[in-house]
Image (cartoon, rainbow, N blue to C red; front, side, top):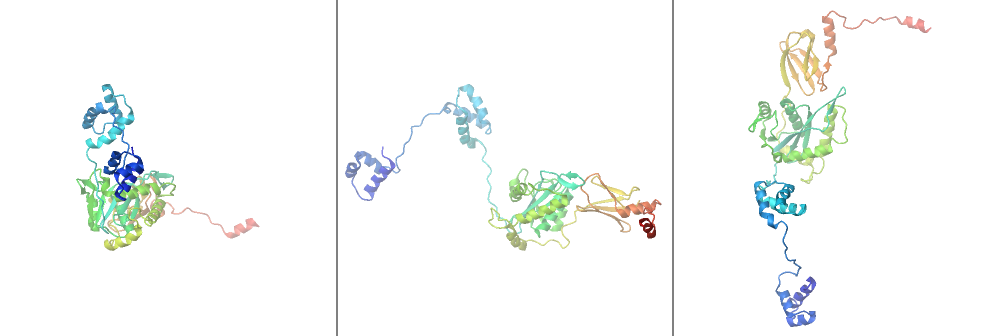
Length: 399
């Protein structure tokens, strides 16, 4: 049998230099028929082993039947089912055959088209839960959630920490993300997040009102279809692996400050897919987006009308906040925001309270002016009586 080099030499001498078959036979010391076969062949010579049978050959029909009934049948179970029929082969031969055979019986895999986003067209959202609870002061920690936003064209991202998945908190997170991004896209994309999605692709009243005030459209992904919002999914994966590890937080405000700083750096990196920095493309995208309302995002505070009780406190999220005791019995409107608790008397417009919100649980927060007013109403001295002595008395003691 000729090797590849001699085969190539024969063809070169004959087709390039015009050497006859007889002369080639004499020069190379091979039979003329061998020379003729080399000149007629389309490919180089190769060693081909005669095909031999496989231990699986008698059982192929049974394996086909099993996979037709269940395309996901494990290889170990296939071996167990064909062993009573006489199969004594090993694991590798079965697994290799199943690997090639399964696609013929399984439903075709889902394929995806590459999506190209126009500037200002779309902003995708998701909720990420940090692996550790967030410190909230007073020796307590609490489970937090981060509303993550990512613009489709620039891939610029933003995040906002909240402590529940209720509609007011999620809407506040959306507003803060849009405020960080600096403009409004045409479309907000969400999965079917409770609090925003009602049913059958319809929004809740709160989410519809929020989008209506901003004059933006919304879209809910199909169930179990995270690929529809793959842009924010990839950003969230990057957030999980690069933000939280190796960090510590003093409280929820420190968490948000570090999160904002991280997104600022992430938006300045060169994006692997875009081969560009998101911050540079964001400048171009903002030109195609609608400016935010002059007053900022819509108000998402919780509102509650109640009366000031005889014990002038109101409970919000397990914490009691003091109210002005002079307004006892009168109706107030309580506004619960992400940063403060505020109450206004409905008949006169007086401020009943203004507290910084505490996310630690089971605390009583009392304003100093409310404590003084309560002591005064009860006829107690507002301040403790402290005896004052003339300075001359201290001079005598020192002398």
